[in-house]
Each structure stands twice: as structure tokens, then as C-alpha cells.
Length: 333
Image 1 (tube, rainbow, N blue to C red):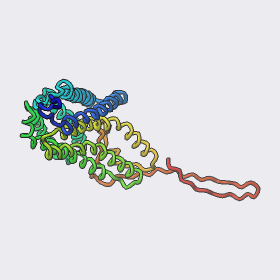
Image 2 (image 1 turned 180 degrees about the vertical axis):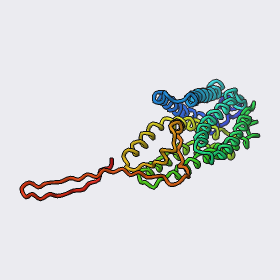
Image 3 (image 1 turned 30 degrees about the vertical axis):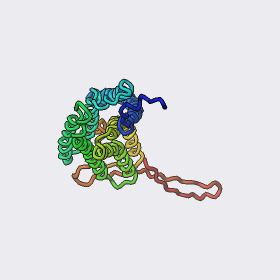
Image 4 (image 1 turned 45 degrees about the vertical axis):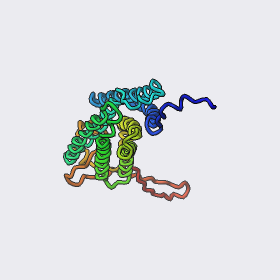
């Protein structure tokens, strides 16, 4: 008679592929994105030492919250996969770190979206109703916190719709912010090829900064609706949180490059819109640069176009025959 394997009498261990397996992989990727966050924050403090305290506080708070977020993710993985290895009953209980994780997630996303909301607010009064809608939509993140502060995983299934609502609100907010900035940039076209080309670059840049966050928020929404009994949606949410922080820092660090590009194009072209220069004060320009805000031209009439050109006449005298050739050339200043 063959010896009996004592493991046969134990209850089967549940599969962790779609739960803590997905969570572990997301934590690995989150660690890499966290390293990118540290790099971008270091670059910000090195390049923009003269920024106002508000923006510096936003960056510092983002780094602190991101650190807390990734530490919580690592603790969750260690608790369930190492400390409680081969203890299936521990999988039914929600450890303190997994219940606090949604709070840090919501704070990171709110901080990032708050910065972009501020940009929309600075564009002009016509877009401030959009800001009000976005602020009201942010209240749904309280539902996300309530949905996750539960003693057991079994309670999570009962409030999956609240989690889905929070992810859906994030997607809607991203679409409103991105759409508003794109419309603003599109209305800022001047008809000059060089300026319109720069605006096209800004539009593409605006789309790209919100593209990754939107994709992972949509994936989190879909899996929260389709599979609320596993942690796949939470895995996508980890990556989305890191993308929100990095998109904020990327926008801040891009200000110098975009300002240099605009200044270069301004000096290289021969046309300047004088009315826009007269309308914009130094304080407004500084605020717009700090928050990386695209400026709308006001509807106060057609701007005066000053085209500065230099006429250069060159007399070329051919040696020996006394004939001269007059060549007219245009050299933009």
C-alpha cells in the first residue's frame, strides 16, 4: 500500500495569480516608476529653485505620498506572500496596510489633478464652471476610501460599485482637463506656420501627459466592474497612481524647455503680435509659466502685426568690364 501524502488532507490553496500575483507584479513596476518620480523631483528642485512655495509644497507632498504608497504596497506583498506563506486563512483578512493604501492613492491623484485644475482656472473665467464640476466630481474619491476601509476582503465585493464610481470619476476628470487645454491651445492659433507648429507640439504634449493615466484608470474601472472579487483592478490602480505623480512632475520640468522653444521661435520669426504683448502683464506671464498654462488671446479686436524686415542691396562689380549687377535680398532680423 502506497504511503499517504499528508498534504492531501489539507484544503486546497487558492490560486493567487489574479489576486496577489497581479498585485506583486504591479508593485515591481510601481517601484520602477517610483524611481522615475525621485529622479524627476530631484531635477525639479535643481532647475526651479525660484518657484513659489505652493508648487514646491505640491512636489514635496507628492514625493512623500508616493513613498508612503510604495511602502504600503511592499508591506502588503510581504505580509501575505512571506509572513503568512501557506496560511490561506490570512488571505481572507485585510491587513492594515491594504486598508490604508486607497487613502494614499486618493491623495496622490487629488494632488495631481488639483494642479491641473489650477491650470484650467488660470486660463480664464469662461472655463471656471468646468473647474467647479471637477471639484464636485472629486468628492467621489471619498467613496473610494470608504469602499476599501473594510475588515475583510469579503466586504470589498459589496462595495465594488463605489470603487468603480471613483475610477470612473477619475477618467471623466482627466477627459475634462485634457479637453479644456486642447480647446484652449486650438483657439490660440495665429495663422503663422511656425507658431501653429509649436501649438501642435503643445497639443500632442498635453494629450501624452494624460494618456497613460487615462488608460490605466479605464482599465481599473473595467476590472472593478467585471472582476470585483480579485485584485487586478487594484494592480492597475497602483500603476495609475505612479503615472499621475510622474505626469505632474513631467509638466513642471518641461516649462523651461517649452519657454526656451517659444522664445527661440519668437526671435527667429519676423512677426510679433503687439496687442498680445500689451495685454499681458509681467505677473501674468510669470504665473502662466509657473503653472505651465497656455494663454488664450482675448477677443478685443484684431492684433496689430508688426513685420520687421531689413532690405539689403548688394552691388557686385565684375572686374574688367565695368558692368554692375544689383542683387536684392531679404534678411529677417
